[in-house]
Image 1 (cartoon, rainbow, N blue to C red):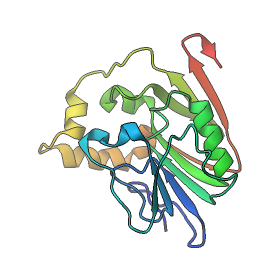
Image 2: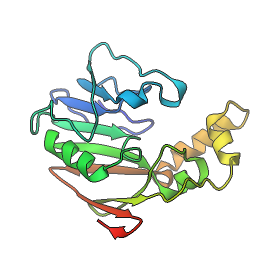
Image 3: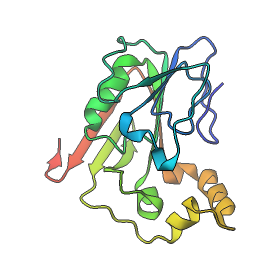
Length: 190
């Protein structure tokens, strides 16, 4: 069983699973779902409660409440583009999980439908997650943003295309044991 929008992620029945930042659309398979205080009203929607999961408030940059490799699998969907310190967040994810899935908007997505709370542009190169600090919020135009987020006759068709070509819009990063992280800020690579 698995989840993440339209994509099937193989999650074995006997695995202990954490979803980091479940928000308004958590994975019902997760045993533990975390949310962060400032995300209580993500996009104007309260986090969804999953009765079969432990709902815990914590910051992905400090998950000290969890043991090393406590989870067989972690899901972190549309979270890391928001965090102040993606290196610390990724270290914590690797510390508490044996494997996982990370999803973030790609640069194209940021340019067309991005939101101002995203502080990083995210990409990958092999087994490396790359975070580039946004110097300013800049969406090309509001046309695609409104098409995606506002109820309108074309919204359903646009979302169908978005999910059909999700790999062009989204970083979909599967990892086991560990992965590398590169952060590029205003002064260069950290």
